[in-house]
Length: 288
Image (cartoon, rainbow, N blue to C red; front, side, top):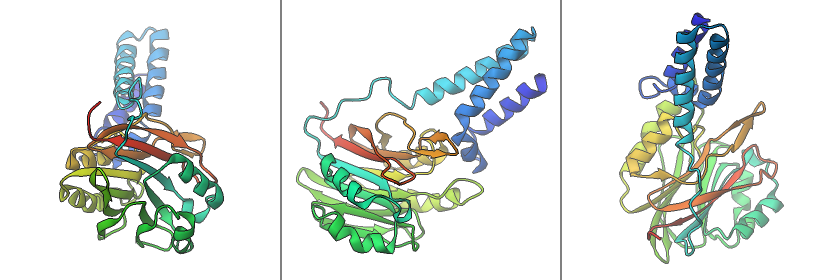
């Protein structure tokens, strides 16, 4: 029992060490499950009257779960009555999405800006038809299926791409003031190259001054090191509740996010044959 508790504590502790080694971010994805297993070990230890082992295991598990819960507000902020910008984010699952339903969903959301991930060449060619209300479009072709796009109803300027796959960005000339908007698609964490590509994103974010929105598929939970570093680099906060945006073998993961230096909230949208749910965010910069 003690060995099980020690092993659980080591793995749980490792999930906080993403800044020291990328494996920490991989463990962070499963921190809730690790904490639940450790808590179960603590309960069994108590039943067998191993009081010290049970107390340590239960305390560590409870602390981890409380920390995770702190990333999702108990009461989601209200939708701004007069948002400065409405952003719709969607991973297109390399073109497997239901195009007709997606167009209807984007239109019904009232989105001013649409950020897309896993845009195929066929998708890119169809964007003018798919998004007639968003004629200003910028695409970064990082791979045959891994392109990212920013599409806006308002003009775009200073459009760019990171040197390696991760970020497509542009300045949106919104009526209430310019907003730097980015579509992000990180690769999976260790043993994949999320930590290797992260510096490109941080450099792009740190170079920005003014209003910012970064939305898309981070392939990382809100409490992971990479998401927190991106937020710190731009002085941003994640908005909206923590919800499962992708299921992997029936395990729900919250890996799609919206970061901004404004305030607001998000709402989950249907998958529409994609492997990711969509997000719509209402964002304002004037405090209510």
